[in-house]
Length: 243
Ligand SMILES: NC(=O)c1ccc[n+]([C@@H]2O[C@H](COP(=O)([O-])OP(=O)(O)OC[C@H]3O[C@@H](n4cnc5c(N)ncnc54)[C@H](OP(=O)(O)O)[C@@H]3O)[C@@H](O)[C@H]2O)c1
Image 1 (tube, rainbow, N blue to C red):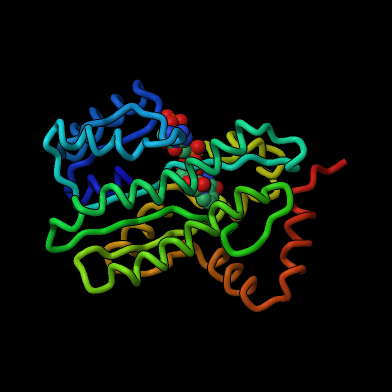
Image 2 (spheres, rainbow, N blue to C red):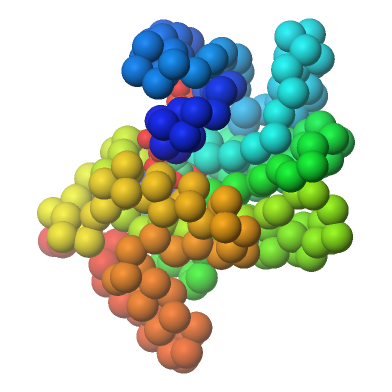
């Protein structure tokens, strides 16, 4: 998404934990797209991460007109087997920090004539997913939070969108210990560049919800119509390790 925005001549502020990757990405963005780019190395899964971002913006005198809450992760397994640390980190990053960042940076966004928030959810937002129960619930939060905030901000300059990607070829699957479904999901997996382009287009055209890819869109629509237990059963079988 940073590259997609850079290709449209937007300057970028990147935030993640890996300083080396961020530094390399900023140099690439500057060289390849002629935009300005800077980065903050910080862990967004700790309380008050939003205040750290705000302090950085003030210190550097940076103004923002787009906020993309993309950082997030999933963790496959039964609740019984996932560590409490992993679980709490996931809920903090995917939900609490996301909402807090919107809250803390809203005043900065509202200084513009037009501004955008894009929150990254998942197709898993729309149904319960056994073995990804907490992850799916955190992403359900992102959709509802984004929709509610969108209405709250309707008469102001900030447009709020939420994107729900399906399987996308990033580091997500390995981080979530979902390597075993790579082969099964390969034909439905989208390139991140395509997902990013659709997401950014959707954000700028002010869409409330964006579901990239026809298959993902059909799946989300079908989940809304079918009895809840049916997609839950399909997910249970999909995410079960083959014996
Ligand atoms: N890929 C998929 O199939 C898929 C499907 C649906 C939704 N999503 C969602 O898409 C979003 C992006 O994930 P991705 O697919 O690009 O996965 P990814 O390749 O694992 O990238 C995750 C990004 O978030 C950053 N991040 C993770 N934990 C962080 C933390 N505690 N503090 C700050 N930054 C952190 C990572 O950088 P560092 O590790 O350097 O911090 C990395 O830049 C997530 O919200 C994910 O839930 C992905």
